[in-house]
Amino acid sequence: MDGLPPDTAPVPSIALETVLLSAARLAYFAACRLYVNKSLFADLREVIREDGLSSDVDTPNGEGIELDEAEGGHLGLSGNGGGAGAGGKSSFASRLREDGLGAALSKRTSASAAVPDRRDSLSPGQTGVSTAGRAYTRLSKALFCLAFSESCMLFTLLLFGDAVSDRARHYNWSISLLALLSIIVFVIPFVLCLLVTHRSRTTVTRTLLLTLPPFALYLFFFYNVGSLIADKLVTEGSHTFGLVNSLLSRLCVPGVVLIASLSGGGALNSAWEAYEWRSVSSAEPVTDAHMAQAERALHRARVDLQQRYRSLALAQGSAAREADTASSRSLLSKWTTSNPAALHLKSVEVEVAAMEKMERQMSQDVSRLRRRKAMREMGRSFKGRVWLLVGWLFSVYCVWKIFVSVINLIFGYTRQSHQHTSAEGAPAPQGTDLLTSLLTRLAVVLNIELDVATWSRLIGLALIGGILLANMRNVLGGVSRIFKATSAGISASFMLLFLAQLMAIYLLTSLISLPSSPTASTTSLLDTLPDFNVFSRLFDSVFLISAAAIFFSRWISRKFRDDAGLAAQYSV
Image (cartoon, rainbow, N blue to C red; front, side, top):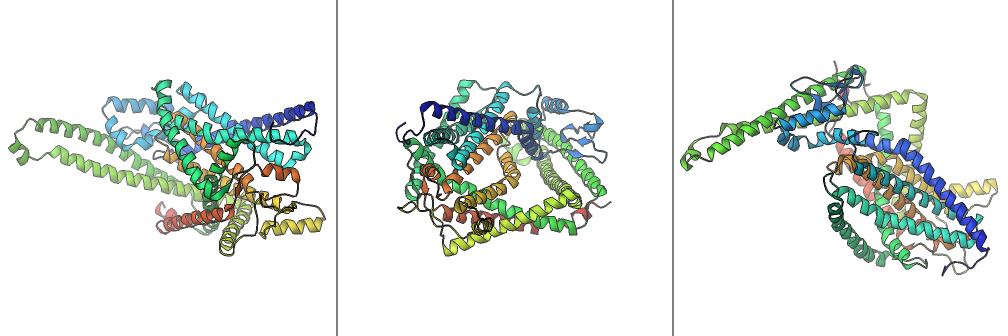
């Protein structure tokens, strides 16, 4: 290949090394697929279940209460009680539509209806899952695992590339880099557009035609807006394939903004969670009696709300009939005659809106009580105390990271990027952050040679990744709420693809931000990546803005709610 280092090993040796590296790719892919099938996809389904108006509420004896099962004050119980299951909910919704209640429910309970349908369609082995839904699930899992394996291969070649020949290292680096860029820029966005525009009763041709306009609009903004930003902030790398340089230069700035905003909010959330752990231990304990009382109150509110929906549907029917009758009256009769059905409809709509607001608030109260009870019980166990200690240490790092970002923005930076080496090939000056100082002292004490600049940056990026992972549930919950209107069977697939996109962008941005290394092989790989001149300043700026925004939102939310006295509201 043109531009690659000259052959330093025979062709059979390079082929054997490529086969071994491909085996490593397959191992990464298989390990990731095992994790996705056993844990991650189930967690995404759980996030979907927790979102929405009509989440399950447990009765004191452990039986689940479903809003959609409430009809005329009678509840079908699921769970240990063995009542109506998922199919019961679907048949009940069908009966409502047949009774003429679908119009009211579609306006008032779209959120509540979305969650059970989603849950049913995402359950493994469920007969209601469409063929397209299963295909999207398999595709999203494969893309996630492929993005993970290629990202891991890039870091493997960077850290342990000296174990193979120079040409094999650069050849496999180019393959992984091009594959990862194709997934990030083209494949995942196209599939995301496909998931959003897909409808179960739409043909494949129509779905593709609906997918192309948003995907073309995305490509237009990615190329044109990305080029404007890249021309001012980014110096392209030295990769021989021009498309790789162009895609990387357009991707790194949005990637930095995305990762900085998520990590800034995550750092503040981690510190805030540690503070809430401490406040929970000193507040009034939440007992089983408090939980039972709160759940019974929520159950009654949901039954009343369901009955109000029925009254609303009847009132809408009466108002429609009155409107048809009034259309045949004279103009004078219309002016002198009132419409009691319309007045009654407005009254019922006001009642429904008030009941919805009350149900939503009571549902939030139950969730907060459950969380406080779980946190207090976990804090009493040995495992919980260990996690509490780890959380406190992690929150200290998060606060330190925010403090260092402020200092860096005020006093400037000393660390240079990987293309800022001197003419003699000397490494760039090291920064003076906490990790660099600790690693320098450790290398002196242990009397070992250590690439302090690279390893301190890798550890720092790993900690930022830990911040993102610790707060990923909040991010996915937000994505679920935004896309709750999409088709039920593909919502978890959408979130898995979003997670794959986020992971790949983060790992690729991490490589771009690495400093130079005294190892010539490592530096030659990093030189193929863009030189991002303002990486640190942009990252810290967005990091602080995001942290400040999350702080004010959490602070205002805490001011308007009384968590300390929440348990007292449901005292028996």
